[in-house]
Amino acid sequence: MSEPGAQAAPEATRPAPPRARQPGAAARAAAYRRFWLIAAGVLAADQASKLWIAGRIAYPTTSADPGAIVLVPNFLYLIHVGNTGAAWSLFTGQSVLLGALAAATLAAIYFGRRALGLKEGSTQICFGLLCGGILGNLCDRLLHGHVIDFIDLHFGSYIYPTFNVADSGICVGVIAYLLKSLRSPES
Image (cartoon, rainbow, N blue to C red; front, side):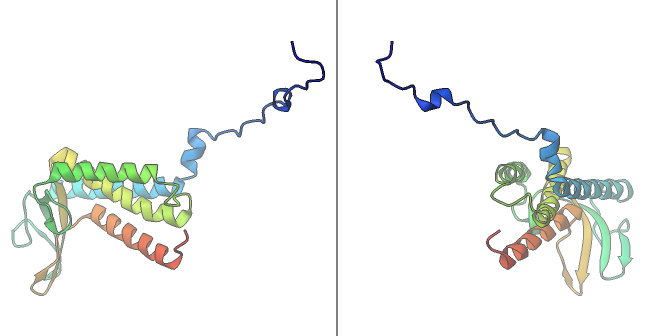
């Protein structure tokens, strides 16, 4: 029993405010549609190009080998090599470690998507390129134990490290994001 003259606590008599309705999974995915489309496009182009190369050029083939496809003499060749390392063959032989690092990077981007501003369209483009490339090379590491590289550029006596579509997506995505960040550091 309450004492005479005592008043009930105001919170007990007020109804709880309505909870904001959370968007469904489809609506959340749609908010990142540019990201998903670009990542899927890079992944598809990367895997299709590697499948084409694997079906046309023996492994391993360098520009000096008879099986190489010469697109522009002394400049652009299509070859078929494997890279167990990272860019410029750094960490050669560390495919498992690099695969784990790729998976960790994808997880970090997923969990940090709000801090990265991934709902913004231009950021989605940058990270779509980056993540599509990471996924493309990760698929290679899981399927082949190495990344398939095939674009071989020669500049006189200098031979640029052989690369692929995924590598291009990663580089362009990172550079675009850095340029975007330099232009608008608050976002």
